[in-house]
Length: 103
Image (cartoon, rainbow, N blue to C red; front, side, top):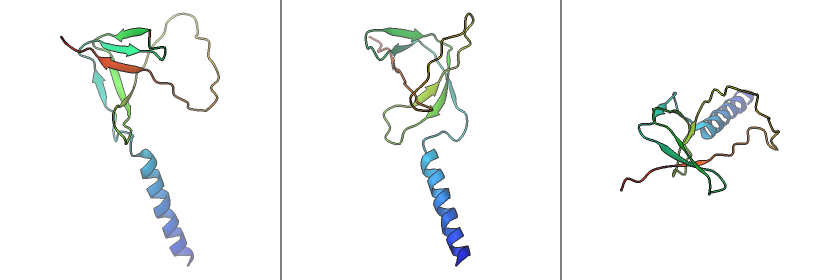
């Protein structure tokens, strides 16, 4: 009886881990920009560009599709940034990026 309960629990745990990790890439993947990538902030009025040859690292592919999330690493030289506490640990506030439409 105890062995069968442990067996069922191990299957449920394995299923749960697989379910929660399904959107994460199996290996490190990176993309090097070939052309500028336009970034729009949450204010929708500010926009900036990541230059060509910027490396983006695949972070997450949501199951519903529509977009992929990438990481960007920056080395910032100068004074330390003023850090802010977040309400939720691990909270992410992403920006949106678009490829420029060629005319």
